[in-house]
Image (cartoon, rainbow, N blue to C red):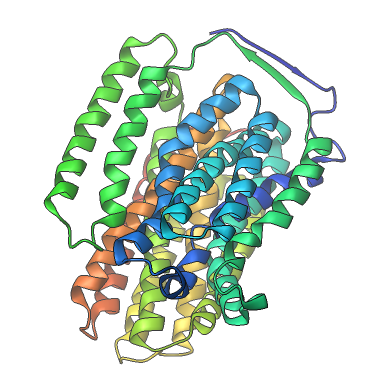
Length: 466
């Protein structure tokens, strides 16, 4: 593979780096926001559109399915056509689809444009990590990745709070529609600023698109994600288990295709780079625990304890604040502790989840232990996620930046989907037992420790430079 890259002389550490980070992370924030903001509006959508249960589930999950399925494709296209171009293209598609979702006259139209919205996010999001990787280096890259992790955490929490506020406000009698329309002015502003301020980067790669790899991987992800997202709603039908079985075969077919192609979608050298595979596995488990925890606690707070959507969302603020502060400051630790802190953070997270189980065991909120445990969980997960991401990207060659970004973004998204499906199913299968949340919290503690276990091989590798 031959790579020819031409950048402006001041591509790194320019005065516009802060503005670049603001623009691309605002796009990332909208993509994360839209995976949670719709949940709160679901009852209003059902009443307004007359949606069936399965139709409503597709409105909520269609975005996630398209998003997860096309992430790797979006990453490869960014490497071929340029990160700036693909970011702006994805942002434009996302913004236009948000407008059409907000104006949708029926459930079918809404589902269709939710799929388009997810596709736009899949084009946009992988470019965020790629642009961070090529724009920042050394300590500045660590800080940028810390802000990136904070945005991911905040987006999930803000989605629940903002969704509750917008639906409750019922602006101009529009009910649920502002949860989509809010993206439009923000997206247009980001397009205007991004088109003028994002760095022009001209990348030419003499490599193919690896269409067979894209097709087999997209098929495998789709076969896995669709039954995970829809399974519980439909009481885990036979077709779902068959689909997940076929997903295993499709992943095997993908591996065979990649071994035979000259330009594999996920280069072997990328997976062989020190720390990448272990870190990617850890990121998957961390995000599975994080996604499952958010989903289960939102259900328990609103369903089991009777909180409003707004109050339930506000209870997550300590976790979001702890996640953000930890993500922004973990680099202040001595470099020799950057890898060991992942294992220590897994213990802190597990302790927080066990404390949460103790708080909920009495059948109430268990305050203030609830807020304390939320903060411990948020801080612990951030101290796992951010260093794992830094380790995974530390030794990626410039030619593999887009592929690494797509791989990590897919692991992040798939982790969330799997976490919601697995822990959501566990919680709902135990409901209405008073111990459903307790058992689920203990299970989350086990997965968090497993995520920390993925970091153990990293302790034996050479310390990253910078």
